Length: 272
Image (tube, rainbow, N blue to C red):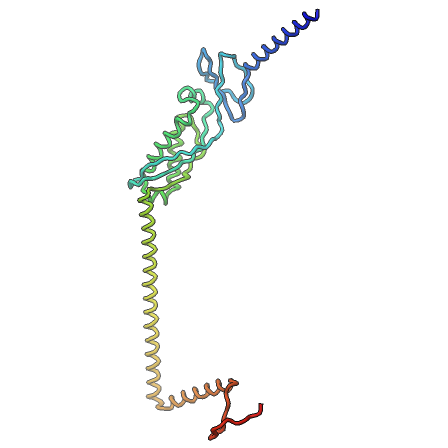
């Protein structure tokens, strides 16, 4: 009796395990920000895109392919040439995501690794096309215009593959060694030219100052000559008196000066 009971329990447990396995294989989860495309062994890729949550499928017959529909970054380095034939190294940073309702077409025509197959090729194509319209100098001075033109053209091109570009930006822009050395030499030449211009302007200012000083001395000499011609030696005597008065004032304020009476040849022993 007990053996039959254990045998029945074992069969029930085995049946329950098989049923659980079947149910588990018939369920699949789609995480947040993801979508699923169903591949049917008999009908191929289904046109229906499955949203987030837990869903049923037919085991062995159907298979879910999960796609990440959130924005993801990708850096694409490109070496190209400018309008004046300068080598340009550019790195483009792209935030991309697939169009959810076009996932069946993307999976059928491109595959799960659509970003590896599409983005490098179209980015290189657009960058070469846009950069070729600008000179090396314009790529620096009009960088915002270049970035906007690349973004517009690349967004339009990616839309044909079912991709949305949320952001496109130029993160790195350098030129060849020859162009960089030429720019540095030009900067040095400009600095030397500015220095030379400053020296010339300084000399001009010094020349003007010397002329003004000479003109002032000439005018002063002319005025003195006119005064002497008008007043005679009186002006000279007046200047002597003014000088003597100034000297006497300065000497009177000094403690190291000793006064002697007229005609006295020795120092007086003055009390302290």
